[in-house]
Length: 131
Image (cartoon, rainbow, N blue to C red; front, side, top):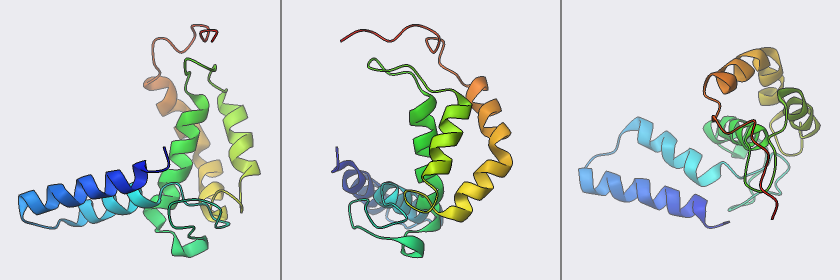
């Protein structure tokens, strides 16, 4: 699991090579792929970056990725409510997440909830399988 940031980065880099060009949006995609599991306090991976050494694109994706993981139903868990996800993200402010990114999220959290509901999986209300 911890290898997927490097694999994603390398897949995008090889696509660039095959295309024979470097595009700005692919540079950002590589940042996100490689650094979205870094944590504000330096305890993340793969490089153990901290604070503003983590690209802003990856700091934004880190919060969005965690939010999605929290609210999504998995075979081993029910999805958390929007309020529960907000509380957990708030708790991660300054440790897992960039404090300014959390503050911005809290200002627009209703948009996250609306979008999540709009694209919710039809199975979201089904009970999680026992395993």
